[in-house]
Amino acid sequence: MSGNRLAFITGGAQGIGRGIVEYLLARGWRVAALDRDGEALAELDAAHPTTPLLSLKADTAHENEVDAALLRLRDWQANDNQPPGLDLLVNNAGIADPETGPLEHLSLADWRRWQDSHLTGAFLCTRATIADLKRRKGSIINMTSTRALQSEPHCEAYAAAKGGLLSMTHALAVSLGPEIRVNAISPGWIETGPWQKYAQRNAPDHRAVDREQHPAGRVGVPEDIAAAVAFLAGDEAGFITGQQFVIDGGMTRKMIYAE
Image (cartoon, rainbow, N blue to C red):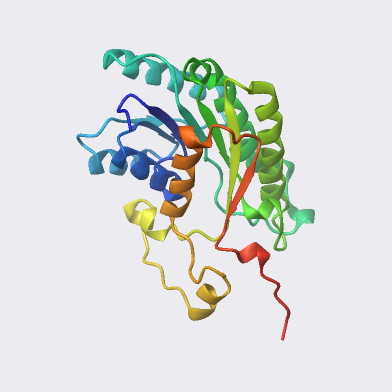
């Protein structure tokens, strides 16, 4: 894969986002990783001292920070004598905790915080990169969730944000095509413990029942999502747009009855 291909990954310093960053770097991509956690970004930088990686500290929910990050990204490309444009935007940033507590106790400020984190951030990053993506006929991948399709109690704000992002995916595919393809990935249970910053890193300890509830026989890992991202960003997926890909080891297809 050409070393000129450029990906912009939000929420790229930890979890699934870091898995995507690592996967693409290993395959010759240039990668810009945006995250609001400076400590996690510093650890990511330290792990890749010689690779074409740009770390950007910003909050995707803040318009001025997104715009400033894109200016830095374009300067980085120009300083390295890279052609302008962007091949891939992954809207992955967002509050990871899905549970907000009982709705009757959920404040309007917290409701908006969840929406801004996932949905407004994706809107701002998409809007800011449209011209760059059109230059290279790039693609956008929105990271939604199986929680946009099914729920546990007290996850209304998270589910609404992810559901909105899922709907925005097909709307963008129609509006931005054919120059830009737009798809969504809805991860299920993805183990991200080893992909957190050092202070929060933990080793997974999955029980047999955790594995058995997945028809695939295991809990997912970030590489499972990253591989799908790489495929959807490639020429082989040139006829795929406006679609949702559920990557959950088959968990949402399995009927579960209380014994």
